[in-house]
Image 1 (tube, rainbow, N blue to C red):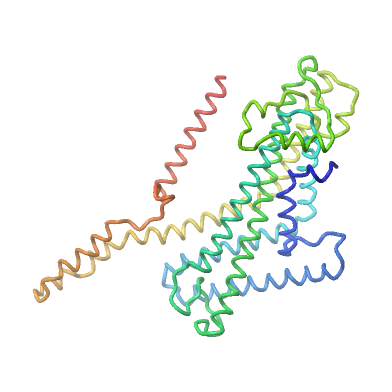
Image 2: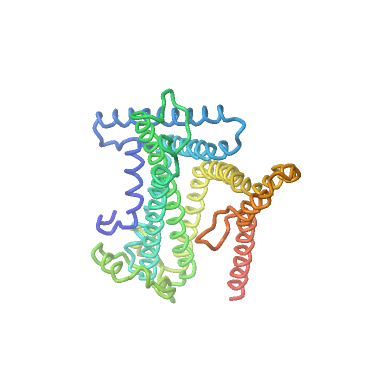
Length: 401
């Protein structure tokens, strides 16, 4: 294990693990005192009860407004999102041992690769660290901003709550309104923090396995010991100096090129045997290891991905219903029975009364990304089509090279 001062590639995972433990999704470490472990167990029960009561309040609101599809669209997003978070949190806790093993399997070889003398490999790791931190910061900021938007910026009348719900007390008067608001705020922030920790950990697994794949790909190309040297392992101080020599936003493709044969563990760097056969066998060994690691990752993460895909699809559907229902405004205005009132010839201003709102309805009620792209099904299909076209073009260009 290298010095802690160059374990910067573990920075994000070292943040998410305490988050999971403080949120009581993961149990405490073995060195934790018995009192803290008891508190951790009680805390997970406490949060589970709070989330169940939160879901019950939403369920009663759905029950009392069973004929209002807009309520289903509004409450449905919160219900589905909370259920998904509870499922993922439960699975993460049940898979604690397996996930701990995956952390060692994914990050162990990176601990060695980051100490290599090859500048291309170090630059690749520095590049990955930079983008991982950017993604983590953006995701965390987005979730906290979403919490603030839901709790503070949601338009509501005096006494109303940002999230609909039915409670066994009058939530529109003080102090019950403040209590319900605090309760909803706690549930929203707690759920979003869990999502940050869980999803960032999953992305980190994929990211660092990809880095190992890049190292293996380079090793296959550098199996000829006569044309490519074997990288050595350098000290933690030298590694840190090399890492600091790269500016993340100025790393070029030439910097990322790996020119030597890399070692995935310390024994390979110290092995006196070297040559094409030894190198190729070493590549095959790590290829098989990575294939097994990917199978383990797939077996572990597939339930989360399936639930994420299914519930996200439902959330998009119920949200889409709310967007689409706005398109019916013009039709409803036209079918309001204005012609009967006009035929009475008692109100000659009916034409102006009808024209004004119908002109307003010409402007579609839609959500846009930075005011440029409408978040609609045609836009989504267009993006998918364009992305596939670019993918085919890039693949074709790579094959020609």
